[in-house]
Image (cartoon, rainbow over all chains, first blue to last red; front, side, top):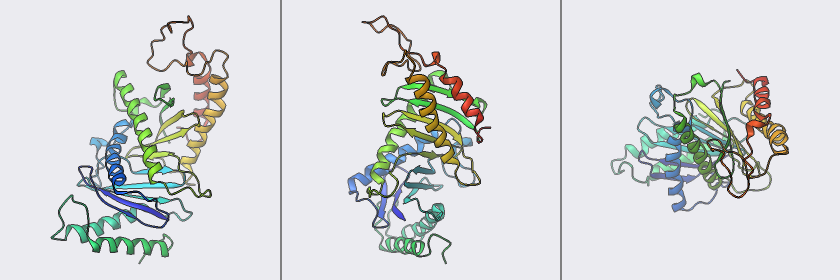
Amino acid sequence: MFLSLFIVNQSGGLVYHRPLSPLAPKIDTNDWLRIGSTFHSLHCLAAEAAPVRLPKNRNQRTGADDGIEVIDAGGMILQCLQTRTGMKFVITSTKTKEDCDLSAVLREVYLLYVDCALKNPFYELDMPIKVDLFNRGVDLLIEQYHSSGGSSRR
Amino acid sequence: MTLYSFHIFDRRGKTLFTKQYNAHFHQKVSSQSEEEQRKLVFGMLFSLREIMGTLAPPNDGFSEPTVLQSVKTGRCTVHVYETISGMRLVMYTDNFKQSDGNGNLAVRESLRYIYANIWVEYVVRSPLYRPGDLLAVGDKGEDLGSSNRRRFDIHSTEFEKRLDALVTKQKWYK
């Protein structure tokens, strides 16, 4: 069961947040902004604090910076996808028996972001995403994952 | 699976114990920035706990409580076991993938064992131990002013020896 999705831009500002199911906690906008920027700094901090890092602090295959990928917290999992440009797509979900591939979900969200937000001529880069098509796309994606039980869709 | 380091922090962030394993893998850092690095680790775990608390689903009494357990980065994973007294046992390992999918659980179980059966048995139950008076890593161990007693040094107990014995016997240790 997914909980929330949030997207942080390369400067650390929150550009998008959305609850994905009724289980998601009710967080007001200011707290979301704080979560976004705190996560941005902790992402880099985790790489700094680690005794072993990726060569040159980057993942050579994806171009992403070294940092938090997965956080396991008892009943909840948080997964982060960092893009080559420094944007972070973060999703939280409860732990279920079926092993839902959260990184696949994040990649789909990234594709949706590219199609609906970036290709939208009225969307300003790094601004909060207020694009209805993107919201609908995310909702549809989550619904498909919930109905197909987390297995491969389409 | 390779073990990189092990730290124990008290609730305020003081390092009570630290040990590096397989140091040839680590990035070279001086001893002063080792302390800085430990402070970073503590700060990160502290802030992450706050964030996870905010992001967690509301407690319905059925599901597992949200407690920070492990954080995975590019090359290593940090496992945390926090006790009710606020003490954190922190272990850095590499990103291993165990066939039965329970790798993280095994490390967490080891951390719990280290606390319950080694720390409590050999440090807390030591007759010289006074709570709150532990010699932290980096402390010079000078006198406490009013009393002549010195701070309690963990290295006077068998803690490290027992810890090493346990860790090298684990199936996941390399």
